[in-house]
Image (cartoon, rainbow, N blue to C red; front, side, top):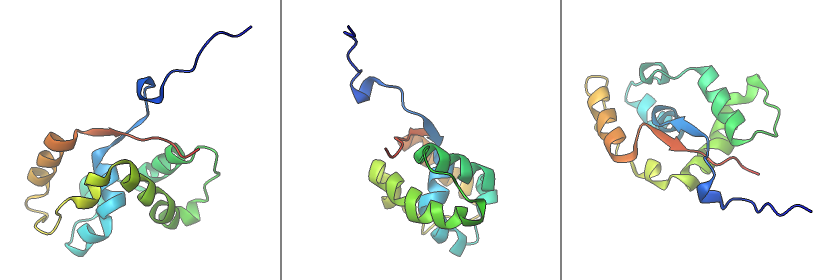
Amino acid sequence: MNNVLPLPEKLVKLPKAHTRLLIVVTRGAELRNQGISPEQLGINLGHLGDLASLITPSVNLWWSRIFGYVDEICKPEILKQHPKLGNLDVSSVSVANLEKWFSKIVEELGAYLPIRPIK
């Protein structure tokens, strides 16, 4: 007889992703339009693959489709879990003030945010 009850979800420690990575996924197009690359935020293709695997652990990823996959599946899921990322004002961000801007974001949201995988 199994008398063990599952923990409520809010007590279970969720995996976390770096806020920089989540900003690249959710606001990357706008930042690229302002001349800021993912690399300038310290993000590479491997980080995107790790995030995609975290969000959808049961899906086999095709590396040739990683950008589409991140944009079509990961981005909406991240914004659903962390809507504040969609409201970030990136209009004044430039290469010159990138670190200062990001420091303010970390103060507000934290350096890492929990990510709940899609079931």
